[in-house]
View 1 (cartoon, rainbow, N blue to C red):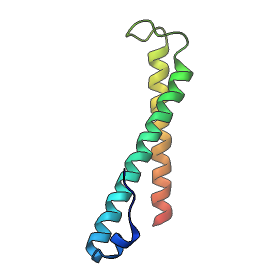
View 2 (cartoon, rainbow, N blue to C red):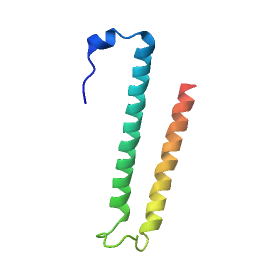
View 3 (spheres, rainbow, N blue to C red):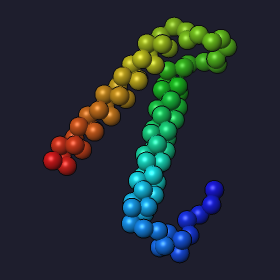
Length: 89
C-alpha cells in the first residue's frame, strides 16, 4: 500500500480533500468493526468451547454459551453507542 504524499495532497481541491478524508474515516471505521468482531469471536470461543473441535457441530451447552456471549456483547455495545449519542446531544 502506498503512502499519501503531502505534496500531492496539497494540490487537491477542497472537495477532493474532504472526499479522501471521508474515505479514510470510513476505512478506519471498518477496521475497528473488524477488530471488534475478531476480539469478540476470540473471547467467546475461549469462554464457550471447552475442548478440541472435532466436528462441525457445537456440543453440550456450547451453543447456548455462544448465544449468551453474543447477546451480552451486543447489548453492551448498544448501550455504549446510546450513551455516546446522549453525550453528543
